[in-house]
Image (tube, rainbow, N blue to C red; front, side, top):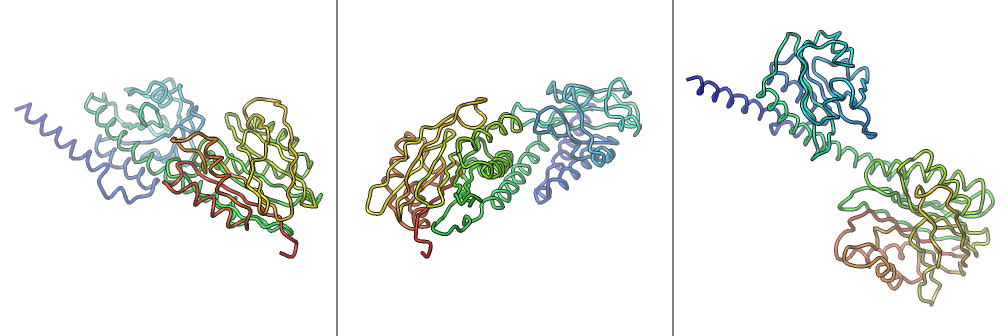
Length: 407
């Protein structure tokens, strides 16, 4: 008889567990979803409080993200160190922790004590083997949580982790796309004597990343031309890209030497963007539009074409990428831009494929391009290199053609 009751009780718990992630929840935004999950979790485990804390990007702190019965945690922006206290121990160990008697010696968060929480149970939220957060419940009366309680909370945490990761990925992608669009206008700034066009396409596998391009006139009469690629993808790469692009413009105001600009930019990345790495090529076109001086931080070689002549590679010796090694020496290369001549810059997403070497991709691009209007060059490059399938990585290209000021 007792076995039947236990079996019936388990079935009831499983039925209620299904309610935690029913189809209706899939229509909710992230905040509403977490709030609803916590309400249902409290009911499922007959708890008085429930909260979700997510690991911040540094991996060193837990941030209160959603709460039911402990709303102060979110309102006050509670942050707890990983490895210390109740929730921090759950995150550091990656396993459940229960405390039957909460006090100042067992928890770091004073809100739990102030709220009158007596007993707590916490489990890790996992993405594969990685801890991404902590889900915990508490009661205002003494309670010894059972193995069944632990297992149920684990299952809820698994469901919450999947939902959280999916929604956060979509939010990150949307934010990264918005940032890219705000920083990379469809058509770069108009400059007399130059016909300029560009393209940017997010990758199908990694999504939005850290590719960028830029062209801008300087007070000296020179023209700055650049393209680059921050390693990684997603919102973090897009944010770093925006900072690097903005800093490059600032340093370009102080010197017309592209190697010096990249040297200063590298110092900035080393100090303020630890762990970031980016390839960049920065060219400075003189006021006559005839001569370019450029420096490469590990970026792919630019191409140059003249009317009636084969497109050729500009032999720029690449120095180390930004962020790779402190105080690396940087060199410059001089090249000519003939009347009607074209310059073409690109990122590796355009040419890199698992089925061919990088040099083969560069050569295929070179053979596909001729000197023509900038917009046509961009279209031709995309058509020639993105025929078999969409690029897995994001793609940025920038074409510049020298024309008469009137044309």
